[in-house]
Structures are given as structure tokens and as C-alpha cells.
View 1: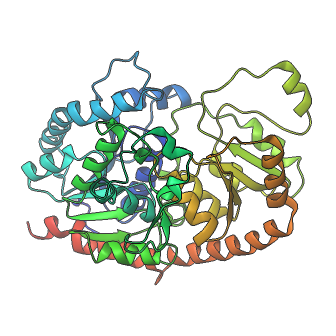
View 2 (view 1 turned 180 degrees about the horizontal axis):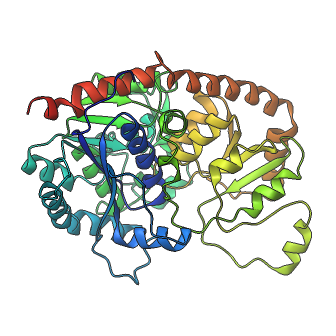
Length: 450
């Protein structure tokens, strides 16, 4: 972006209450702050306490024009939010609107604080739309998924109408039914049913996640604009299909990870966001490993108690960490591959660091991301979890990725994507220009009209 904006332009940023949503929203907030926006960043009270505990101090920004606020998520402190996502989703939808409105009122009456001129909220926090309208400010939706992932969510009503979901019975998961080609999805030629969101793999028409995703994805388009953390060259066909069919403006401004590193003020980069205490020992261990020799494994699972026998077997060859800075790990020279469930933040981090992926999707839009990484973009391999996964099969794929000719071919492709991603966030790049347009056409519109 070229010019700085007036400091009275006040963006209120509120992510969904999960780590994978907080990080990209903070990256966006840092960029806007560097351009002159007054920022209010809103976490849940529960998550703010986790951040405090993980970092050993109450999070602070060091700026008068970058404030951190909290509101309750409606659940008791004892609730297992990470293990019961359904109740967390339901509670945020039902219980956060009132405290969010109260926060908006409090900010409006706070001395020395400019009035909120725009709300940037997560695409599943659609209660913010009504509150923004009540205060007469534009609300911008930020979906933290890929374009293809979100476009897949928006196909759920059509999938239901055509009878693809709910499944007639569970035998559909084993009889090739998921191999059905969907030749009617704009911008996604020859996509398979198996590439759609995992939430469609249900036999229950009242399945919570199927209906929640269907409803919230559609409601997110009742907005002044939609932001996606991607870049045009990566998802060109899908982005073009979306821009011609959705009822709001669409701005692709990613990868926010590297965009934020380029554009943010140094002090902003120190604002803590991690919900768990990071273990830095893994970086010291990586320093001792050979170039591109390490496979980084980060799967969303409940931690198991590993036997001493297992730990003895991997001694000197592997390291187990409870929580680490994934971006720092992936940027390390010794890391050559990434075994991942294919969440979007992970995929972008792999692209930005030129690390090949081996995909093992199971949740949300991870199947869609996996298809695109392995087929459309060509920098990954998939472990087929529709069959009983065998140890020998996994080992063979990992060796091919890390040491084989296939891995060499894929590495050339991901390095090209890394270069394209870097170009997108620089002056005259697509994401750079799109962010500039977002600010001028949407985020400053309310301020300039007053």
C-alpha cells in the first residue's frame, strides 16, 4: 500500500476463538495498524487467559492505538473447548452478540478512542453483522479458509438439493460413492464428492456441523466485503468463479503470514497470540540435523501417552514436542517435508517456506485443500485414509517425498509457488493491490463519509 490512512479510522478485529483463526486475524490487524489504522483486537476472555499463562505475562501492544479487549464466549471455564467444538460453535453464536454490542458501546464512549469505523470479523461470527449495522459501520467478513475450501462450503445447499448429502447410509463411505464426479461446480472442474468438506460425510440431516457450516457460510456473504487469505495466481479459477457469483466484493490478500512480516511494525510482531506454551528445544535440535532431512509431523490428535520403548527407538532420530512455533519449524533449513492434516494455515506456511506436504485430511475443508495441493498445485502427496492405512504404505510415500524422484519434482513446483506468493505481497503484486483497494473502497468508506 502506498499512502498512510488517518489515525481516526478505527478497525475492530474479532477472530473465532481458536488458534488457527486468531493468528491470521492478528496478522491482518498488524498490517492495518502499520498503515495508520487504530486497532482494537478482541479475544475471548478464556483465550486471553491462556495467552497470559503461555507467555508468562498479560499480553500488551505497547501502543496507544492498538488495544486488546476481551468478551466472554458464554461457556464455563471448565468446559473442554478444544475437545467439544460443537458446543463452542453454538455458544459463540448464541452468547457473544450481547457482550460484543456492549464492547462497541464502551469503545464509543471511551475518551481518546476514535469511534469504530469498520468491523472485521471471522466468517463464522455472523452475529457481528447485526451489531455493526446497529452502529452504522461496515462489517467485513474474514474467512480463514482457502478460496477452494470456502467455495466448497458454499456448495452445501446444492449438494443437499441434489441428494449427495446426507448419505443414505454409511456403506457409501466404502463403496466408491465418494468418487462421484461433481461436474457442475463453477471454477472446480472434475472435483469429486470426496474433495468436499468432511461435514458432508454424515447420514444425519440434522447433523450440527453440516447445518452450522451451511448456515454460517451463507450468512457470511451478508457483508460489505469478503477477505480471503490467499493469492490470485494460486486459486485463479475458483476466485474468478466466486467474484462473478457471490453478492459482495471479494479481496484476496494473502499469504498474510509473509505479508505481515513485510509490512508490520516491529513492535506489533511481539504481540503474543499463542494459546499454549511453546517449546523452543525443537529449534535447537533442528540445528543439529542435516539439510532437508527432517520430516515435521503435526496432526490434530489427542496426545497419547508414548511408551518408553518408543522414545528409546527414536532417540537421536526424532523429537517429540507438545507445542512449537510451526512457522519457525517449517522455515528451518533442516525441514524437508511436512505431514499435515491440510489445514489452510499449515498449507500457506508450507508454501511460504518451500516445504513439501504429505496430506492426511479428516476434518472441515482439509480434503479440499489436500486435493488442490496434490493435484492442482502439485506440491504434495496424499495418504488415502478411506482405506486401512498400512505402515509400509506410509513409509513408502514418505521416502518418495523426502528422497525420491517424485519429491524432487514436487520440490521444484513448490519453490515456484513460493516465488509467486512472494511476488503477490510486494508493490504491484495482486495481494498488495487488493489490500490497497480494500482499504480505499470499503474500510475507509464510512470514515470518509462522516
